[in-house]
Image 1: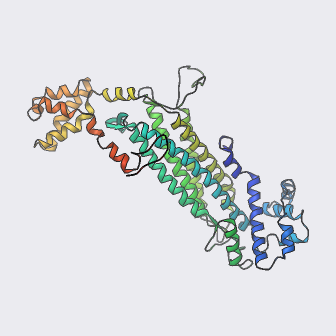
Image 2 (image 1 turned 90 degrees about the vertical axis):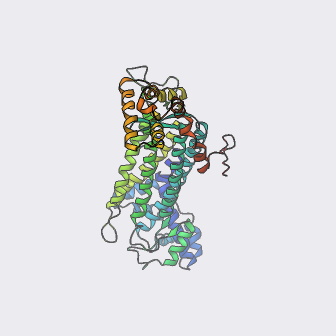
Image 3 (image 1 turned 60 degrees about the vertical axis):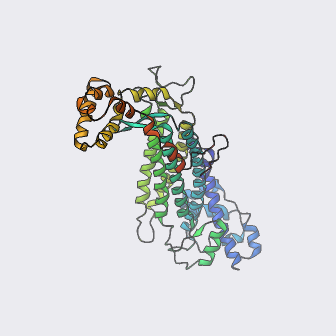
Length: 442
């Protein structure tokens, strides 16, 4: 697994210690509920509240029982007296495992939400900083028409805001507990006990269950992580493309003394962005497994269990890592406005072709005829690297409709950017204050 790359907070969530602490927390919450129902004497509850599991002892027992929950329970009851008989009263293993897993997922989700908040803050700041930094927009990898780098970043920011909402929805889906016994009938533990336990743990009781919390909930969570990772991959792929030597409009951070190649000292590779893309693929693969875990035999089997021990922690750890990594990229991104301008100018005005097309149409020419006039000059500009404006001025068919002054007026970069501020206002970024971090939405 990649836990060595993730933040300490996420490592703690998926540590064995936290998992078994959650198991004990669930077991004791059930005991408290039974005590409130008058089943467990209060004197026994005083002792039960002091219960602890013994990890070493648990491992010893597991070698014989080959069952983690029975080994866990034995390691707890070994340190208790007669009151130990109340532990696991009426429960099945999944009552404990699945409810504890929900607690872990809530904790992991909180860490990921903080990660997204930090990235969104960086994207907002960068979008405002480069709001008016002109660059060429590209479709199919080919020059299209001008945009600004800030607009590209604002687009990313709004996408991450949507991902924040999706994560909140996925967390709501997994914020459930299940204390309903062997096949979910509540035959050995009442719905009232389940409600008490879940309320104590800050979860909702699953309205109906069989032996497990239903895995469509977990699939919702993992596929949401995959969707967030897909956005990060999209952003990182763009940075990789813009960092290519032929483009070189941005570069990810590259520290002094860092090396890009063991053989070529000049190399500055987008290796951070490439790492984001690679791990996004890992998470996407885990989402497929999560979907396959939804279909189980009858009231349950354990075909999902072994896979979940890998895919759920791995997905959380990997996403935590690449969210932090991409935040680092944005925070330290090198932006080259002069290079952006050079690239826009490199096609000698071809990017204004649509403006000329529309102007000719407004003069009364059919769209097809106007398109042919503009395209034949544009293709010559491509092939001979000639100035598009001068080619148009020398074309009698064009100048019979558009004067030189009219043509000059069409070659105006500002035309393409005149609604940038309105877009920023619409998404609430126009009045964003880089110093205070506050947004004043009109």
